[in-house]
Length: 193
Length: 193
DNA sequence: CTTTTTCGTATCGAGTCGATACTAATCAGG
DNA sequence: CCTGATTAGTATCGACTCGATACGAAAAAG
Image (cartoon, rainbow over all chains, first blue to last red; front, side, top):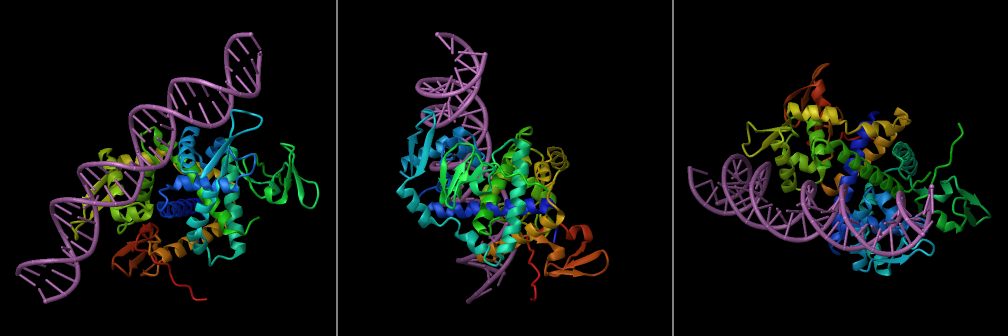
């Protein structure tokens, strides 16, 4: 087995290519392209701070103009809903519509991946995840990009009680389920070694 | 750390997106798109059985028409050379031109990845590589797609002497360096457990 | 208060993609 | 050997994706 990081990169890229082709198939019935499905999947996971065109652009690595075009199509198709932020009226907030949730439920975009990983033990998944997460963290640190992650691993997250948390950056109280959603403002806890 | 395969998929996709943006930057000076650079990189690694439009299409997960278009541009730019196969006159064989090699050398498309993995030990790289390779193998098994790999890990590979190998499928003698090139005909050795 | 910055949308043009049709070469079967 | 089927790659078309740019509205900065 190889210890060369470039072999790992090759596998990452190949698997991503294959999954993009799967996404294309999964979206074909509804006339959706891979980028559309990716946007819907993102919105199904994004928390209250991360449901904006800008956050989506950061997550997908696209420009805001490109994301705006994508969202136009999804809105027209009734798969997402847009509403104005309460505080900053420039900001558009997004949510999945019922039709969007239904479509994701039926398309099962990640099914091929579930099948492909069936023989890999949870421990090996965890190890691979850890290595790739650290790769992403270093990459984003180098490029001043957003890492994205869940509150439970975030430096801002305060635990108030068994089920109640608080975002130290924004000040809001968050439920347990909400701390497991994807956040644009995420910052990894600093590890002391 | 998460043991859910879907988290791993998310990281794979995000990293691939980020690397695609890096490829776009790396190719910008020469007016090349990510898919062009990917084709050049593939040709820099492909062995004698894998240097055809069809193999490239299988590797990149694209149709033959799409790959043909890509190769047209690379040929026009003098970055690749095309020649006819000795045996089957339908088959076009491809090689990097000197200009193509030079361009890859200067563009350094994988530099960002090298930097992003700088804090990950070789052992962790190996573990992640192993998990992703198995994911790819299962995926391709399910879909009857080509795994691609190196002779040294291939079921067809016979060792004749210290430096001389033989492809059991094709019958050719191969040097040590050539056994480390990417092969379309690769089949993983069967493991007895 | 004025100027600058920010957020998202509209528009444009270049590039990517799959599907399809086609030609030349090879293979399979009678 | 001949004929029909299959294969490899190219040309073409149209739909789609992308970044760059301009713009209007809102917010921030000085």
